[in-house]
Image (cartoon, rainbow, N blue to C red; front, top):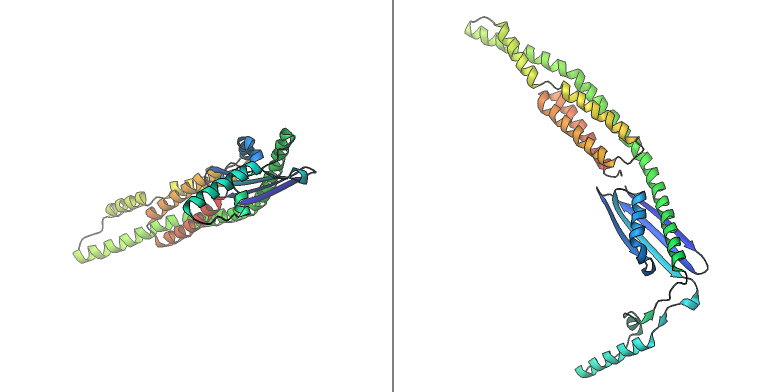
Length: 288
């Protein structure tokens, strides 16, 4: 499920800014970008994410900076001098003029000495607490989105139930209409040949058609899957994978109904159900 969470902490010595974003994914994937000081506990931070998120792509950004100006990064003059001397020698050997861009030189490894924190353990504890706050903020947003999505899912299930009930009501009529059409064709054929009607043959053909087009079992399973879907929606644990599976089962039963029913009206309702199921599928992809 998509979401965004943010938290920050500032005191006299440092500031911690944490941002968490999630997008849809069938599995859990964590991508973290943390300040160097927090790299030592990156694994612990990812484990904390797993306590809050179980499905989706999670992007974490953690920035840690010192507020004390006396602890600002210092230039390592020996390292900078070494870079300058080497670059001057290289340019002189090639006969090209040498120019120095201070901004570029400061980006070279080792030129700037990053100040260290006095109490690293306390800092890492603060980073963890700030991430926890950001994850809580993330889940609050996801909960609000989930409640709105639940309403839409329930509406879709209600529409499917209405169409299923209409198909259930229509199914016996299909058999009766087929019997009438068969008898009509048989009477015309027998009249043309001068033979008499054989009721046993008509009954046998109707029974064969009934067996091929019997969708009662599929309708029962469809209703069962709808019930399971609703129960899973209110389960306390994450049910995204289960809902995804039930979507597949709903679609499978619907396809079977469409292929067996042999009726234009039922086929029309089947198309409507499949459209609703696809809408449900898109929403279920957002559910953890």
